[in-house]
Amino acid sequence: MTTKARRADGEATRARILDAATKLIAASGFAYASNKAIAAKAGVDLASLNYHFGSRGGLYEAVLVEAHRRLAPIEDLERIAAADVPAQEKLRALIEKVLSPRSAAAGRYASVVAREVQSPSIHLRVLERREIAPKLGVVLSILEEITGIPREDPALLRCLVSVAAPCVMMVVGRRLATLATIAAMPHDVLVAHLHTFALAGLQALGREHAASKKATRARRET
Image (cartoon, rainbow, N blue to C red; front, side, top):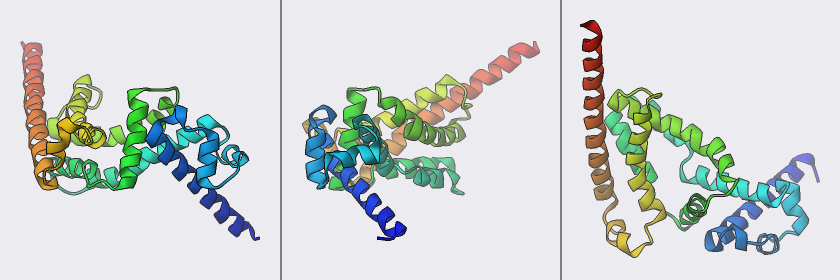
């Protein structure tokens, strides 16, 4: 077997392990997804898990990172932020991306991330550093463009929470009976509602920020 063939075979095995681990963790949680069960589902021996991921913790971190990446690839977010359109349209595109119709695989990825966020472990820090933090930077750039609130102002983080929370709820909680009616609404209707709601709040806070800056400037000049 050539080096290229061995590399391709190794990548395929790694992908199989990740897929098997994702399915089992989404279904029952990391604590109940044993290495033995993951290896059996992936069709590999236990040694392959350590070979490709170093440890059980390394495997879980790889699953978390891959799940978040699949749900919201940073390349897609960067493309939205860099588009030559008004910031309001970027916000709509962002919401539409997050709420895009979910496949069965996407549902598993959302379950994996939701389980970790709801019952965080030490591995959450790796997910934050490698996936969440870079993506937040991109999203904050769009919110800063809309509101005029600078990145270093904590108020912009509050804006982020207000915009993201309803979207995240629809992604990770859409199976809840209380959200069933909303989840069954046409995609465009839900996107339009969340966009209108978020934009109104952001614009109001932007006006408040501008008024505060103006008042501060006036006080300094007197």
